[in-house]
Length: 453
Image 1: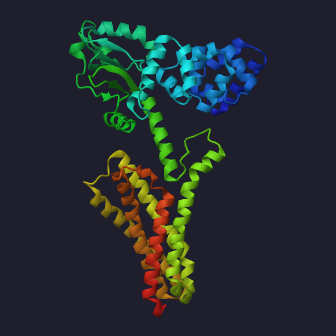
Image 2: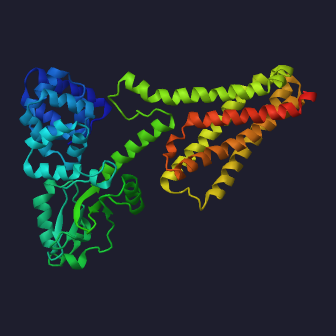
Image 3: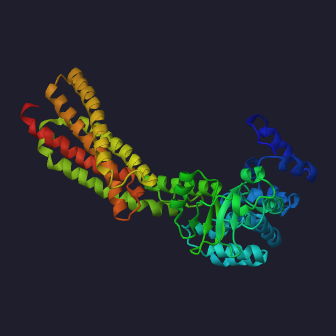
């Protein structure tokens, strides 16, 4: 198996497509199957409908299952529409359980039941068991392809089990040790197993201090445990500590990617950012409430300006610095918001250290504000020759940036305590709040100095 470089990618693609067009099955299989799976996927998604149908005849269901597992759901659906029922069922049989579950979870119930009915009974039973778990729990992303051995066995027995079962296991680096009732007793790494005496008893050489997770644990917590203990996989157990599956690092990466996509979408008020197949109408329907809400919130900004209409009419030049003040406050607030959401996600921000974080963000905003205050005051003095105006704008900028940094930090924490997703405290929402506060500070200070402006 090779990984393509950019220099030879096009050459390989041309050879493979030419083999398809000329019905040269032998050349196609040789060139295509020696590629890394990610390159197989890259080439497959470039093929048209007729070429894809030919791929299904050139590759066995087992060979194509590797490609199918890595496709987006919308491409997987398109493939199934072109395949025979027997071929598609065999693909699901050869895929790892967690990949099959991920695909079936996206289907409607009738289609999922139909595919389960056509699969191998043992495999279908395992998948059905996983599908019964809530979507956001560890049980919903675990796989049943792991190696477990009795604590009564020897190291030699474990090595034999790896040779016999390893081809179908998703992870062979960890071998899980169970008792006669399937209760998890320990774990032993492949490295330790290989270096052990063949006659050593597994129960004596296994690591008894094992990290495991309950099937009902939310996936966010699973990610934290994998990260904390630097694991390649973590066992999933029942309330009675019976081993029922494992979650591997690639599953964790998928969870992190999904969480990041969702958080990014919520952070920018784009709730459908993770839906590849979402239509324009559905996207507009999901985004419109936020835009409408922010539009009306913007009216508050207009109201603030209206309250200080006399000040603005008396010193019209104040209007020239409003966009700069609003943008700067929004930018600083959004930066603090990103820090706050990240710290909440990693557990670095809670009520025990909130005041230390508030002081740090306030001082950060203060230092940035001092820098900006000096620069804008000098700029106004040079171009407008109005020292008082420079002082008004500079002080307003200093206070606005300091307050904006604190608002960006605290607002997600408040939402978190109210059991709302802190990522919903989106950049545009924070920006709108800081715009209102920034303008109130600006015009309040300008009003105080109006007689000398």
